[in-house]
Image (cartoon, rainbow, N blue to C red; front, side, top):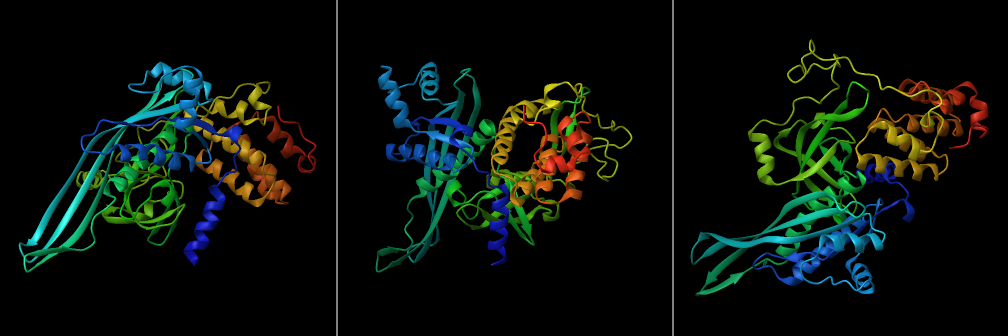
Length: 449
């Protein structure tokens, strides 16, 4: 019961309301069958699995093949045979898609191996492997923004006994192809979400040995699946104060032991790193057993979390020699007359942070959703989470302060306004709210520009 309550609370914090206008529209084409031995029925199912998994994200609106086919017919285009990428872009653009997803099943094999006492008792292990190649195309530019190849695997064991020359089997293997497809699609779907909207699979929380992950049955999670947990350090800035990346380390390999519809529980595998290094918000990515063993064998799992360059409080000097580390560079801000310094519009403020395109889009959308949601404790917690995931988000710090004021938490509000001004000393809304919190709380502040 404790685990269920924790899951409900965590999901309530991370779930953001969305509207059709705020979602990224992705068109999904039927995958081609280039794999010997794989039935066309299984290949047709690939599109359905992609649709289910991508549509599970509140950030995505999926446009299915039938709709794209109808548009192609209206435009007197042929969608049969080899698809011209230029035609894909045109059909997707007419359908209002920002991206189209196209690909093929390229490899398939299914093998069986028997062990035991021949003629008396045996165990038969059957394994299926399916490789999918996919491309995500931007309909505005025709650019391939993601090219991914992933292999899904599924195994099944069954016992067989021979009595009087008659072989009897139990637990007949079935649906291995479907399970392998689910795994491959799940991996590609997550990479699509990362590329298109900045959605990442993450650690939701830690409860003793249990690591809660943001992937559930409807997103393709299954018992036994392995994930690499990546811890991110502070931002890396260039000499102009622009964020150009983050230091990231793999800190653990976890394996799912329990699956719910929208989340799953995992545990660190043997020799798979230190569970104490895992934090809520750490990103996760599915890995194969071979990849996991390679990380362990090559000792690539970190013994400490990454930190910002120049952060002398961290004892991890192997990667960051303290004597040579540069001091953190403060972001340069434009004058108080600059638009982002006077606006509370996320579409005008957040692009100045210097984040990757996908993360910028996702953060803008989350801000817009929260601004529509009123001033509640849950909204306050979500603004705090936005600051935690990117300390340079001074708009989130300001909005956390405004929400705190509305909730009667004046002291907390002042701290958040200070946080916003620490990042951007010229941010006018935070200056005004701090100078006159009573007026800000009653709504007498500058309108969003």
